[in-house]
Length: 163
Image (cartoon, rainbow, N blue to C red; front, side):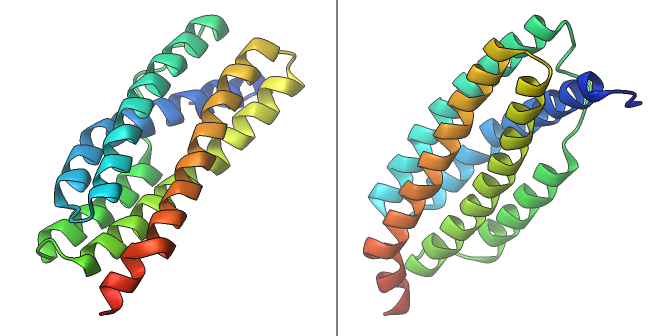
């Protein structure tokens, strides 16, 4: 996609985020299934439902902006998911794998936080306040997911993996 102005950059960011979220809808069930910690599995399953809603919101944002959200592949998310898939292929379910899955999931969350943060800033600059609010909702959800993963890791998973 040729970028000529900030509107193009925002449209590109939304397409990239849409692709990233769609990839996560496919990846999260495998990660959740591999988790041995119930709280971790439940958090991943909950985030899958949240991610499906985020996909719907991005479709809405695309319509509001008059741009198509499909037709782009987020290479960054592909790489993050490939790393997580490697963990799943190389390891049997265990407390150690749970700790590694949390780390992989947090890398995903941090990638999304960066992308949504930029998209919110672009939308605000362009005066797309409804779009900015919609994207901010998702940004807040990603931050909450990251904090929940940290809490799970620090309260139980890391200690169990250490044993």
